[in-house]
Length: 513
Image (cartoon, rainbow, N blue to C red; front, side, top):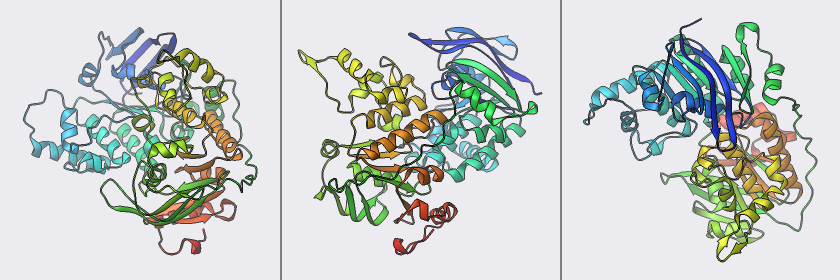
């Protein structure tokens, strides 16, 4: 056993009528990886934010090096060697890596010693295989690289001895996850205490020395590796009396010949740097069908969905909907056509953090009643409460501020908001990312219900088994092209994965995974 860095006893956090954490006890030791597991809304992120000092505890005690601390806050946490890598990154996109790292330093001088700081960043990058250069501008980097900056910000503090990671793999592509888990093992070998928030059983059993399971804000149990990790027991601890349901049986898609969908003809899309990220894309999606979009992260998934939704200009070719050319129409016009979108980063793109859940739900364009020019919020609350989507997705209480929600609860809210209006076209980007097993199953059932009601669905995911299970057809984005369509039942999942990595050009119809 390593030295105990922090103990918490009876830690409780209350938000209004909600008890997010209820008398939690925890010991964090150096040289060990401690996983905090639980379904979405179990209180994992709230607990970690208390340990880092973002939220003051309503009750309970934090003990550091056997001494109780008062007035615990992030500055005091960093001084005592506690650092946190948040699920939503704290970076200024217009600044360089070096400038962002400088802002995280305590006791800093007003003049940056760029040479020394650049050397320290590069040394950490080399030690832990972090793929960033000090003078890169953050806005040019993908989510995985931005996470690396946050890790450097944590490590560059010489006091750091305890690292907190909040759902770190939710922003990573599949090929990046194994590398990240190896990095956690290196942190452990170097004597760091690591707290890992995750709902992914494989990650827990691969690297964790201990698991603490939370459910509905309470600590259910703690399991040590030396006592044996049992996946069934972990899942039962997370879900309680719920039972794991099999993936829904996918019935054959119904025919909707009277409801033509979208068609892309020779479409070219540019990225944020004005580079052609997708060229000459030809694609059709009928109503009542799910088209899965596969590809390694950064191969044009975001740009494609934004172009279809109207949030990004199409620089060449044509987009039609129902036989009507909509290439140059606005997002508002497409919303009126019934287009809805769940983006890959809903907290950044889909949510006003200072609004309540109810106010954010109203942004979906729902009909609202007004009295003397004022929205009747109680009427909207009651109508939403009657919608099955709200119950199925367990959307948090309407008076909660969006900025206080965990990443999983933000995902629940934005997904429910997108589907509640029965869209004609749903662009669903990573809809199951960061969600627990039971909620993922509900997302899948909802997508199938929408499909069978005539919605055309573009499903973007990096989880190939999910795409194979849910899609009626598959398109691979690789090498600036859209390859396909492929029929899942006729494809080999390994061969399709190789196609994603290889990115062959040529005639998509000739590709035969």
